[in-house]
Length: 224
Image (cartoon, rainbow, N blue to C red; front, side, top):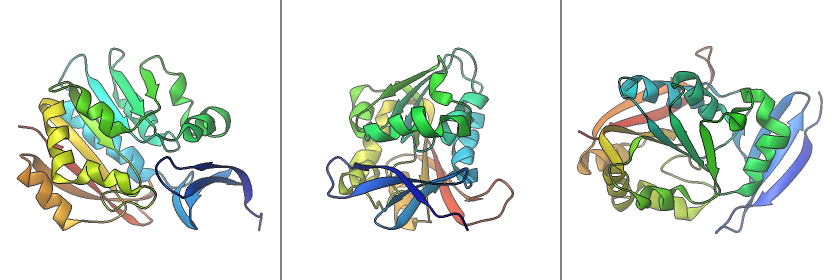
């Protein structure tokens, strides 16, 4: 078997840990502390995060979408595939190395989504961007850390607290969607969404497009 080759590693802002980019043949992996965060062969649920969200806002015009977490670019690529030419997408990525990795090593995997003119990247905490404007976004997609129960950065918890969810609620336009990816189900988080005024769907999806692999959870929380 071909061994994994380390390509690069980077510190996580506000955390003592780091993330590592690995390659084995044509396969890429991003890991932290021995745990795999994402793999280039397994992105069905990341695609689903975008596809399920875009279906629910497709009747709108001049759509504005905020994506929290670039990852390997699959969620962004799926969002672009589902979007019109006049859609505007902001990608918030806190770790500059992840943006660099996408441009240098990973972009071809998802058809170079950062090169699309509809996309802008902001290298900062998505929570800060969400707080900037009220009733602005048609959709906020969060694929940050490992979901509501984070692994890489404790500060990510504020996104998923009641306070953070209320901030997202006010940042969305009426009818807007907050979509959250998680590696597992979290009933307490689902309750918090409802307590903050969202109408919520909880959807289980498979990690692979083929319908195989681990089960992941996506919450689609709509602002009435």
